[in-house]
Every structure is written in C-alpha cells, then in structure tokens.
Image 1 (cartoon, rainbow, N blue to C red):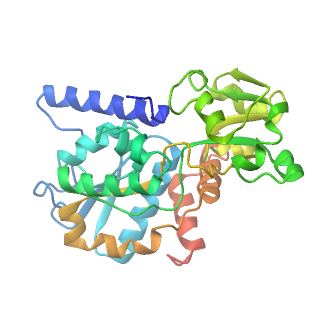
Image 2: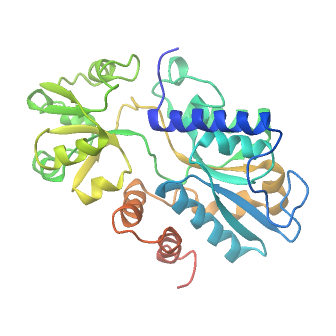
Length: 321
C-alpha cells in the first residue's frame, strides 16, 4: 500500500489505537464516561452529551463551538472531555460508548479505522472519500458522519504573502512558472514518500523546484518568513501562517488526500436529538482562513478556546452576544 497518509493525523490515530488496546487489555474503558451515568449508546440521564477533545487548539475550538451551540438550542448539557489527542482513541471511546461525539477529519477516518489508501478510484476525487467515510462509518459502527464544517487541515504549498501578491499566486498551478527558481522546504519524509511525496507532486503539477531542503516544522515556517526558502509544504490551518504572513496555495488538482473537518456522532444519539438537523447551520460555516485565524488566537495570542468559540458563534449570528 502506498503511504497515502497525513503523518500527524496517522500517528495520532496509531497512538490512539494503541492506547485503546491497552485500556481494553486492562479491562476498563477509556477514562471518563458521560456525566450522571446513563445507558451505553445514549446520552446520560438528565440529557447530557460528552464530546471528546483532542489536545491541540483546532478540534478543541470546534468542540466548544458545537457544545455551546447545542446547549443554546436544546435542553442538553454538553461536556468537552480532554483526551490524549489521538483520534484512534476517540474512535474507540465512541465504540465503547463513553463519548457521543468528536470532531475528526474524513481523511483520518479513511486511512485509519477504515484502512483505505488515497489511490485508484479515490485519487483526485475527494468527494468519493467523503462519501465512503460517511457510508462505511454508519454501516460498520453505527456512527453518523456530518458534512464538512467547511475547512480542510491537510498539506499545502505555502509562499510568503508578498510573493503571492507580486506574482498573483492563488493555486499550485499558478506557481508552476516560478518554481524553477525556488528552494522548497519540506518535512523529513516528503521528499522520499511514494504516492504522495515530492516526485509525484512535481509530476502531477508539472512543477519542478530548484532545490528541496528537509527540516522540522519549527524551523520551516521561520525559514520561509525570512526568505531562507521560497516555498514550503505546510499544514493548511497552522496558526503560524497567520503569524508570519504566509499564504497556502490551493491544491487545485486534489493531489493531497482530503482532510475535511467533520463531526462524528453516535447514530442513536444523533437520531434521538435530531442533531444532524439541529447542527445543519454549522456545516460549511468555518472557512480555512477563519479556522487558521482562530488557531492563531489560541496558539499565538493565548486566548481561551471557549472564548474564541463563543466569538465565532456570535460573529456568525448563531448566538447573541
């Protein structure tokens, strides 16, 4: 199988799967069930939902958006429970009925629990990935998967904002005429991976870089900002893009696997409380630019994720100030 996987998401899924296996071997569920007890597979007595939160800013912000919206529109109370940050653990917690919801990514579900690769009939067709995830999560595990919240957190080719403005760059294809003079920064694996690595990226777009340098992400963003490199393969919603005035270009040929943010809900709970209909106004409501801005506010400006989530809901008219 070719390595068609977003590294940070895949490693989180593997870590979560390992953690879940250890919990099962120890004879206990994942820590912390719904408040007040209640039967498995339904909210606890008193109308309570628990959303699992990965321990980094992006899904945590989105969890609080969901929690505050649900509490404002229903008699339910909602807890946001911190986890190790591993999506595999959250999937296992859902199957063990210790949580009812979590924010995930369709590409993570596709390559993680569903065991698929972004190749063959799926390559270049993100809509097929979305539909496959939605159908199979329901068929195999009775998990309801929402439409996208609106943004993707995947790989992206980024340049300095000044470069994008000067050369009118908005997509990877628009950068093709300039890349021959560029030094590209990547992580340590991108240049050697088969399927979704540098060679295939260049072949798909007909783009050729002057040189490619491998470096850590902590070095990559500052290197691009100060002009030590001309472009970088980054994460598309990283708050450092905002901080350092860098612009991700649209992957207009869908080379990278899709990683749309989605909400996964226990299907019995979704049906009981009509959550798909209730949450419908949120689908497509968070743009990549806005999620990046919110990540920046939490990661760089050190704002509270709950406050950032509340500001989003007020800004879009979902809640009153």
